[in-house]
Amino acid sequence: MQQITLRRPDDWHLHLRDGPMLEGIVGESARDFARAIVMPNLVPPVVTRADALAYRDRIRAALGDDPFRPCMTLYLTEATDPDDVAAAAEDGLVTAVKLYPAGATTNSQSGVRDLGEVMPVLERMAAIGLPLCIHGEVTTPEVDIFDREAVFIETVLDPLRARLPELRITLEHVTTKDGVDYVREAEKNLACTLTTHHLVIDRNHMLVGGIRPHYYCLPIVKRAEHKRALRAAAVSGDARIFLGTDSAPHVDAAKETGCGCAGVFSATNTLPILAQVFEEDGALDRLEAFTSLNGAAWYGMDPNEATITLERSDDPVTFPARIETGAGPVTVFDPQMEIHWRVAR
Ligand code: NCD
Ligand code: ZN
Image 1 (cartoon, rainbow, N blue to C red):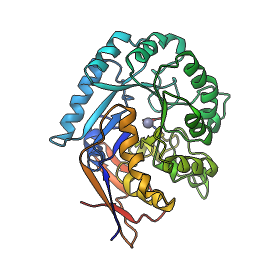
Image 2: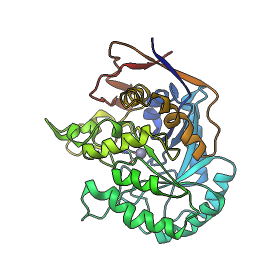
Image 3: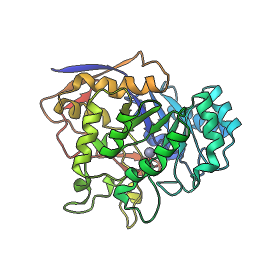
């Protein structure tokens, strides 16, 4: 049997939610991953150091004695206090600050409307080397939803980088060729995460033959040519490009409705899907860089000592269609392709 052993992976962009949802899904990430950057878009959001401490404690309580490490983030608002951010970074509680343009995605109402208002925070972050994670989409009503990432890069990200070149920026869940090209052309202080699902589906999967709400996420899936560019970037081994699943659970009732929530839940089967993608693209030897090395290096952490082994089976492997949680059932990402890899237990 073909096997591949990797340093234990990390997920550099993950939604764990709270309460019964947190309790129901955290094990899906802890099973295969050692660490994750945990997104702060709760209701209300995780804005202050005290909020992050309390949220970390709730995550730890849900984990029990599992050693999975949540790396916390703060949700940037126009009222964020630079001293509070610096204090949270200093003791290692937070790994990054998250910028949501107001209105860009799930629970982003408290996000930033005017970047000028948060410059004192960003300047402080640049000075102490704390990275800014960015949801890179404009929210201008006139801009087509499929163009919002490319327009953000040109009109917001590039000017911000010119104004504050020392700020370390992670452009999150890049979904376009424009995005990966921009990151690969950058000289310094810019990296990006890619999700599992954006390497596998394009907008036809979501819209042809019926509308599939479980593929609706933000940034929205784009044309197939963008998916191909993302895959090429993922398998390239480029040190600035690494996994952030953006696994974002919503209960089925909130997805399968007249106005469904954005988010794909992929924690359960991400690693087998990625092994399949890297195998198909002839790059299994670069899977570890994408899942376990590049992101840790970017965030200034050592790779995990522990390892994980993936094994190939001749027969396709199946995964649970949904995870039952105390909040309700959550559908697991269906890659619509045969997967021949599983994590050895
Ligand atoms: C995320 C969520 O549900 O919190 N949804 C999504 O479609 N990715 C928010 C986000 O990361 O944009
Ligand atoms: Zn997200």
